[in-house]
Length: 417
Image (cartoon, rainbow, N blue to C red):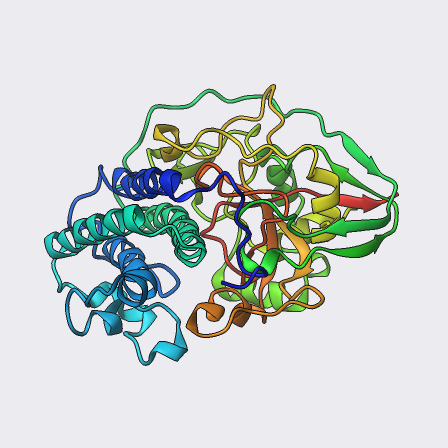
């Protein structure tokens, strides 16, 4: 496995890898514990995937890239390569993404049986083989599954939000908006990108130098209360605040507030969460906004979005991955009162998702993992409450199209010094 793809620390030995494999696979199943079979099949829009498909695809990844080529295994069922390949063109044709919700067969029970088979085969292989190639591919597979854990939560939230019943949860306490402070950065010649000594995706490197002018970056994300003021001041109806593509998208889709917000009969703004609906808390970080919306807000506030290099250099010593990933994940982002607020929402930047200098993807199908998406995407940094523990770091480069809203995405503003 090329060094540019995954960097393995000495502590990440094969003996510890088996336990890590079991923990990640068990956590995926734990996230589905409250779902019924009907919840796991439906696809609410072309950009999301059914829970059953996530369970199958992550198993396919281990089968196709590890168990068959390294373990001498065989395909569980003929034709499943076509069903559960996501975007690996080198591996041939696949079922269209927008039609994943039509896959009522294979049934959920058979997908779960396949998962159990993959788990047993992988755990057996990890006891027999401690080669660097197996270690690197397994770590990649685990990070890949952790990405799908986060996608599973965002996708099921979007699906349940389409239900007109909107079951209400208990009203949460409403906090006060914390004051916003600024972190000063002197600029200069800085290093960005992943360091050696642990796992990193290939798009996080190579580590390289960038020149930054002096700047300031906010010490917390933008709050709902600040977003409500933006809305009240005509933020969604003032074209001069918006990029052309953003304004066109906002008008075409009728954006008037963040995704999942709606006004109740009492004229208060409410938000849908994985535990039902509740009033918008002004002290929580705003969530489920697009990069277009984030850019318009920053312009309205007399600020701007930070570049990803500014974000990384300013936050690398303050990085806080946020609340523990577990039962609390069912809630919307937590109140920021008395907290640093880092890691509660992914934070949009002003940077397009492009390769770093001297970047080279890995050879073969596995090289399609990140590099092929370096067009039409914008970078987000940090983490969110849906991010699995240990799955984010200052150099992590998340990326989505600028119109995407269903991810747990917010913003942190910056300004020139």
